[in-house]
Length: 261
Image 1 (cartoon, rainbow, N blue to C red):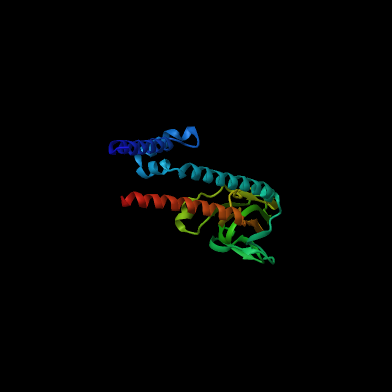
Image 2: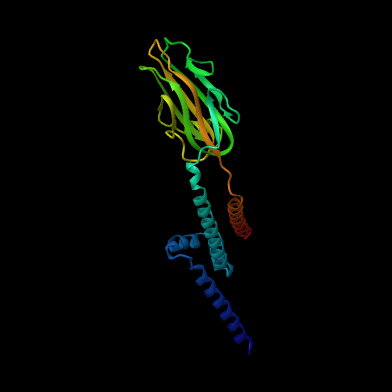
């Protein structure tokens, strides 16, 4: 084989390799991803080079299978724990009233024209018909909210109502963005899920408003919010965090290679 033939053979190998890379770069796991895939491939060189790599298909299937395993495992766990929504709360958060052993106690934020008399909440000045109490609690971790319980004496012409909001962080700007629930009435002895958040959260605020008729005041013996601490499954958390961490490392590596060229 002379030099010309040798060069032609090398050129053919390089051309075949380029064609194979180009062909691989057009492949997606699912056909409906093709439009966005082609746009990204044309826009980012690192994206093109990654999909032209022989490892890309294997990596994509591995990530997909890991995602499906995590998803199936999470669904199984969710089904096992879904009955938790109907369980009796493990703990109570005391808003006002006599403290019972094991209670988590909310701390006062703001109040007006209300006072505690023999552990019961009443209007401080009956001539001022409105009074309110607002409290907040930190549950030290995510919890599932279950119900709200109360005992109250509400004479005709008076009323007691409450509203609730929750957050994952105790920052003023966060609270400002979260809206209160509607107001819900309290009367006699009762248990309700009205206003109870469906999402797990760590912090909660509750506002209780007492309204008299100028002569009589409603009396609130206690308000308690039932909750169950949420413990994230360690296996799911580990798989999720490792998957996200692994993908982040891959993209950082590819970006670094792109910037170094």
